[in-house]
Amino acid sequence: EAGVAQSPRYKIIEKRQSVAFWCNPISGHATLYWYQQILGQGPKLLIQFQNNGVVDDSQLPKDRFSAERLKGVDSTLKIQPAKLEDSAVYLCASSLRQGDTEAFFGQGTRLTVV
Amino acid sequence: DAKTTQPTSMDCAEGRAANLPCNHSTISGNEYVYWYRQIHSQGPQYIIHGLKNNETNEMASLIITEDRKSSTLILPHATLRDTAVYYCIVRINQAGTALIFGKGTTLSVSS
Picture (cartoon, helix red, strand yellow):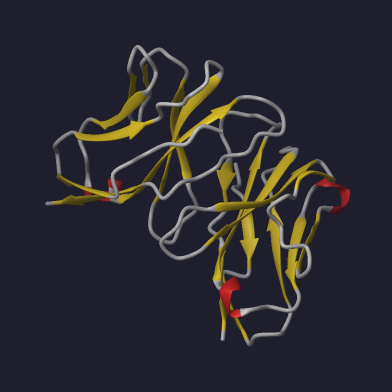
């Protein structure tokens, strides 16, 4: 079974530029999460989708971050414009259904904003 | 979700049992205890979860105290590949609830 795929693995941009990350969850998984992990900290939930609907985006900085999950499969997370403090690893995870016991994580995209 | 308290770091010799403690004194009756780990440069990986009974799988054992205020994850024979950050999370199994991570325990296994 293929895991959660994310791309790119690494990205370096200048502040005020925009960037997008892509996630392909495990086939058939209805729930998709985006997390932000700053160095030395645990992952922080940004947004949770159930199919193509948003369940929780309370921690998403909506002035600069946006996410979509068209057709309830792949998802993209965008930052526009980026700030230095956005430097982090962005993790995508999926689970079969909401409240499922196990979530599967991708390897993440490491973003460096200079 | 209830908060958890874990030691910042622990060391373990290869081949010995690693016992990772977690305090969750404000856990609610319908909240489960989950453990995930994150190996360097990888995403977190599910290990085990339980409600009130002790649990064991191929990776680890989970011991939950009778009052459910604390738990211990046991890796029976630690290897170098078990070096990782281990996260203890409490969560209800309900639609809409995501995993909320703390800082976890960095376990270093040495030969």
